[in-house]
Image 1 (cartoon, one colour):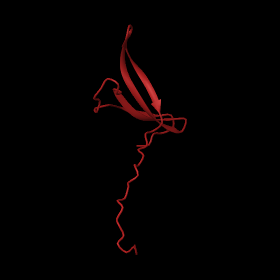
Image 2 (cartoon, helix red, strand yellow):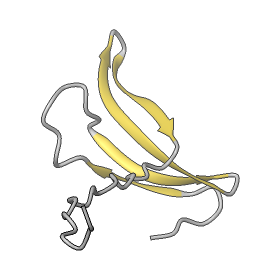
Image 3 (cartoon, helix red, strand yellow):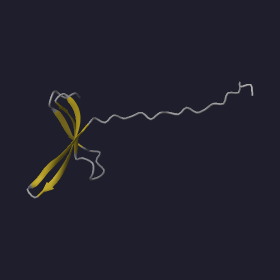
Image 4 (cartoon, helix red, strand yellow):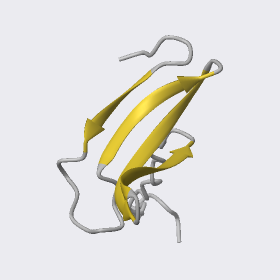
Length: 77
């Protein structure tokens, strides 16, 4: 889903397995730049609030595959 300028969508993080992971995650468009947002629900003395973090979109890097070395029996030695 592509967000319009200065909009976004945030969803509950159903895959959360530890307290360090965000309660909500999503993607937002800020001034034309696609960003990821993470939200944690915190408790303060005046009640609950959201703590937010913005980051560049995650890009999975490909790990190089190593081809096995095949001996060449055609060598003259």
